[in-house]
Image (cartoon, rainbow, N blue to C red; front, side, top):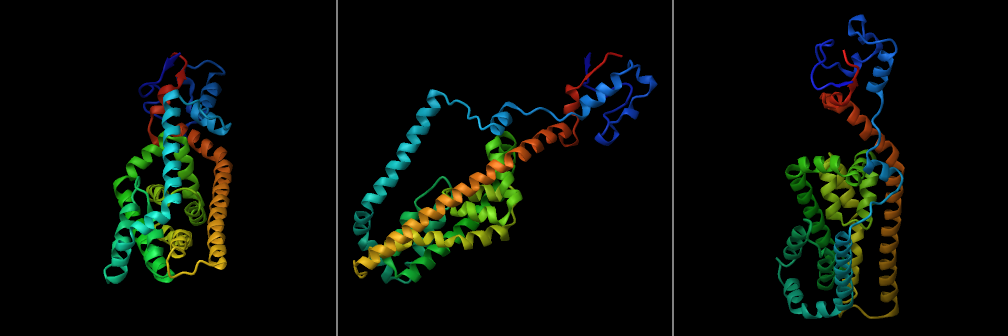
Length: 314
């Protein structure tokens, strides 16, 4: 058996997929009886799944090293700690920033400052948009506050989209080939279109992180923009929480009930969206893995996959 590293002397070059048939092998190939059929089958057989693809198909999670576990737990602990701190100290933070919020409310350029901050925080790995939205809710009445947060969110997401589209598309394509998890997410975004994008924006995935995926997989800007606008009600939760902290808002039972309803509704929508996306990912796995295997077989028109074909000696 010899390995095909160069154009075969019989063919004079690499055959295209359409040319691979039993008729390709004539008497001059000097192949013995039965070898033609075996070779044709070898050419047409879809490559087996890689180890990563096999694990994805069967829901097998690779065992993390001790170092990886320490890093993961440390990140989770930091995120939870920050979230708890912000949740517990929100009122103190708001009270401490009261002079600044008063200044913002009293000046015509005041709304531009939180809009600018939200735009900057729209770029990963930065975070903290929810805290800014809460402070905006404390500073202005509900309609104005929501309009300010909505403007900052949309402008920031659009800037994020175009930045990653033109600066990181090549890197995203490489990551899509390298990582099956990222590739699967990119696949359902590309194939699912508007509804998948909209649900992801309502899920627990941070919107600005999701935008980096949307921008690098070829999603239409107008589809992305429509989903970004329709997902703005999610921003109403932190804005309303800030609004009920205003001294002018009466601390009665009705306000507290509405606050709790808004908060619970936001959590429920996030969980439902997450479960729906998880279901879509699971359903797309078999087709996604099959397409990766076929892509290796075709090789994008390049001959490297032929270099792995074992031919009978001639």
